[in-house]
Image 1 (spheres, rainbow, N blue to C red):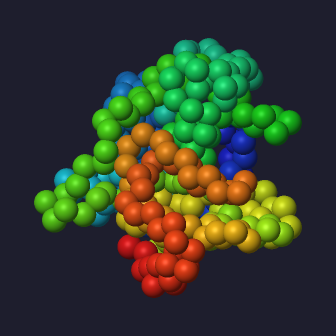
Image 2 (image 1 turned 135 degrees about the vertical axis):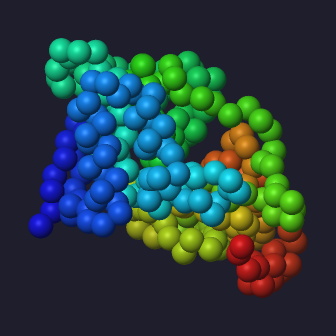
Length: 268
């Protein structure tokens, strides 16, 4: 039997009550949330620490991180909501807390000095809490004010020269009457948010290392190979796009070679 839980943002998540290690950890989180002796900093450290079974210890050596798989688990959003509730001033009602969600995506982008798509990526991944009403996202100014924007430049590599996994990418892919835009990536998933005929708008989950992209039209074909990088890049082709933290490693502009490169490309 599924349990429904309403987040402070107003969003409702459903989950089956966890058992085993995750169930025990969740009980600790709930107990810490209710315990006035536990600070919000201590609760945050618990949720984002090595004891959380939802975090991945294999992505970055010596650290645990929240991957796209983590953010897809409703229990992680319940944990994040517990932190948000812990930060509420005593006596604050849920309605009052929810009313704080007043910033739009453009306003948030301006405040943080990043693009609107970067804000949406942070919302999709759960790094920024937002309330969606009438198709518009509204964000909490307190959450936005404490959000850390990375300015580090190209993504670091490990001792073997391998780039760390890439994050969530926004994309418009598929086929139009006169063009197409295809991607090859190891995740083999595409989270569809909108569908227009044979065109899809959505996100590619994080965890990838190399992605191959092929854009074709009546006049040309182009191939790109990309790898993770800090900052944001956008790849446009005939109304299609790929947007997120990446850099282009290779571009093939000769149509026949571009199609051949995509055919032989093996994602990592």
